Length: 341
Image (cartoon, rainbow, N blue to C red; front, side):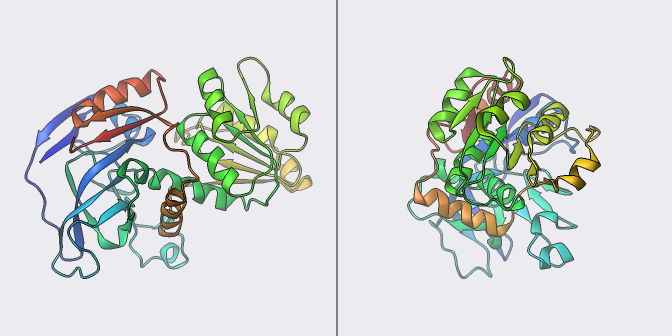
């Protein structure tokens, strides 16, 4: 089978290897669609430390091609979305329903303590506990289940109350997905802060009530004048300066969510007195859980998430390096790869 193998920084090799066999409690899945995530880009660029060689890719869906000897609930031909986060199911975090914080988490092609080869391949083996049936949902849409599951997990962290005012800082793919999920979760007024005009237009199309250009005006001054108190500010970029911006936007009694992935050594300043006196909260969100993954599949099946507007570029497996180059140049939004095209 063909795989897209990262052999070093900025180096992708299309490799031919033997098709794997599923273990007794695994499925072999033919990968029909896989999204390209910023985490994949970090692996490609070297800003995320991994051991090369590695097959990345963790936002995927496909068709069951073979089943392990001890698998009874799935059949060849079943259509599934893949949750790449494999918890140990034994540690305290797993037993409390926070499998994303598993002490020995393994990721199929993503970021975790343990990383195994992922879904930029014609086939991948997956534990039976890491798939959700997708019925007639197309593979392209189903590949959104993993990032949408992460978004749902983030919104869970801020205990969103219906009607609350939310600001999303950053209108990349995840920012646009957050806008949509916030709308379906009952947010009141949603403001998107994004410097790229095309992305601001997309934000309005998928559910934002207002957009602000932070390169033209200071969001911390303009947004409160526009909507009043901000109940929730979500940082979806991962830069210290935008995290500070989200902190400054958050009003009394509000919550700031750090969703974007910041550099490991970055630091920001905050006022502990403001946290105390205004009862503000700062929370983080990492990855997804089996619960948020299954909810993401259900939400995609409902048709309330606009996938088509967010997909700007599509490639065969050989085009993965081009997708990375476009992402480094800030071109487009969501990139999809079809390994069996």
